[in-house]
Image (cartoon, rainbow, N blue to C red):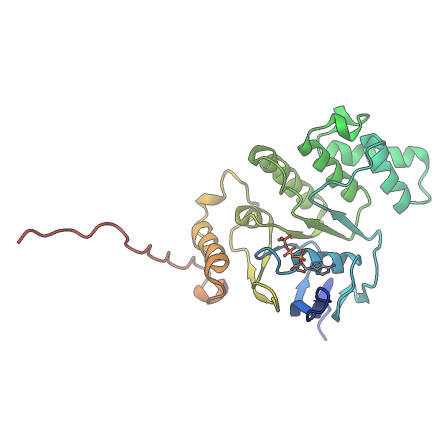
Amino acid sequence: MTTPAFIQVDGLEKTFPGPLGQEPVTVFQNLDFEIEKGEFVCLIGHSGCGKSTILNILAGLDAASDGYVFMENKEVTGPGLDRGVVFQGHALMPWLTVRENVAFAVKSRFKHHSKDEVNAQVEKYVDMVGLTPAIDKKPHQLSGGMRQRVGIARAFAIEPKMLLMDEPFGALDALTRGVIQDELLAICQATNQTVFMITHDVDEAILLADKILLMTNGPFAEVAECAYNPLTKPRSRQEMHHDDHYYPFRNHLMDFLVNGPSTPYADKSSDGTPPAMEEAPRTGPKRVVNA
Ligand SMILES: Nc1ncnc2c1ncn2[C@@H]1O[C@H](COP(=O)(O)OP(=O)(O)OP(=O)(O)O)[C@@H](O)[C@H]1O
């Protein structure tokens, strides 16, 4: 008998009631996928295909219309502190300092921790995201990137079995985004964290994910492909474009987003070598031959 995956999603479907007098809308259907412990999974797909709804169902914040989510063989039926969620808007409490915001989550998760234990836990994770100098500041005294880091520290500080992130870096400038991606990668590698993350950024997915779920457009969206990241680990933003798989894999993901599903990446090269680059269409001017 095979051991069930850490997260098992079976036949997930979500139908929302339509606006007054209109038919209900099935946003996605027949979703089946698995997440192994310690795996980093990214979900990509166009706006409206239901990515946030899926994440909310995994978090237990929304209910599926059909199908199931199991975590460690137990059905997910509501929110729980075994799952940490990071949204695009960091959702910090503005009247609390960084320390107090993170401590609030730690105290809810570890009810029997002493004051010193809570403090130690808070300081460990605030330090991990490089915010020790700002630990006693309030959110309005921080930049957007710093606030997002607090959200990440808070989610990690409860030591969740699974971290769920909905476009956590979507509102950040490219430089800050890169720095926090590197931090996230380092923390995930150090803690073997299981992560499910939504992103619109193909390079972010290639850098961070072990596997990438590719969703078709809604309504009736489905996961068309589960693409395993062929780039060797550890990956870095600075080096990953030198990996032979980078451009073929990136092109595959971009082609999916532009043209829809095609041959799965794994089937394009069965022997582990990168598939040959598809030749770009020749659009240059035709050579005029003088008669
Ligand atoms: N509570 C709701 N009631 C009715 N329709 C909803 C509700 N929540 C979401 N929807 C619809 O479900 C669809 C999927 O929404 P969702 O936010 O999950 O998509 P998404 O893929 O995350 O989009 P984006 O990439 O733009 O964030 C959208 O068409 C949205 O309008």
